[in-house]
Amino acid sequence: MNDPFQMQPELRYGAPVCDEVLTGRHFTIGYSYYFRQAKWTLEIINRNEHLLTEAERSNNFRADTRVPTRFRAGLGAYKGSGYDRGHLVASANQDIQEIQNSETFLLSNMSPQQPGFNRHMWRRLEFAIRELNDRDDILETYVLTAPVFYFGVPIETIGSADDDYGIYIPVPHGFIKSILAEDRRGRLSLWTFEMKNESLQGELANYLVSTYDAEQMIGGRFWDRVSAEDLHEQKKNSRSMW
Image (cartoon, rainbow, N blue to C red):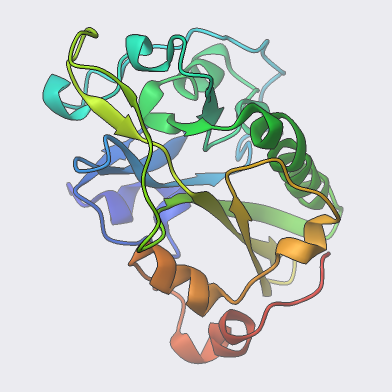
């Protein structure tokens, strides 16, 4: 039994393709060697929260030693770059055990994010997803997060040949979050957001998109272990906020 899709609860409904699957204790990263960061992350928000007490935020940012040094980001790449080390799996989504929260600070779970984006609209979306998860009728909330690089748009990089790992990290043009909520009757509800990596205005609902369009943007299928007939209409159309 060495198939992560059979062992990791957060992968039960499927995940996009990637270069390497990094299974964690509480969430999974689909890593891209080419982009030196995650292609996607997948989590169940605090899946064991009924068993444990809340842990403090760790803030121990560090390189992920599971990734070969020539394909991974180091702390030096972010220093003085003007970009935040932006969480893909949010720290506050995984805060019931110290080691669980600490794992969210691996740099494999980070992408360069504009401060005005990371600290405002992105944070608002993370908070709203936790509010959804806290509803009495919701049993589990699965969150898939993915950086986006747009064809034909120049890519900025951070880092330099002089840092610890001697590589550059491309800055994503935007980010996708796809949320699959399972209620206590076993029904699945799907919402997908696309946000550009810049200071954003307006309401969260303004950033809802078709899941099919989001799949095409990152080059991989979302929730592919759910029968296509059961999610087709929800993946085809962007739906209203919860």
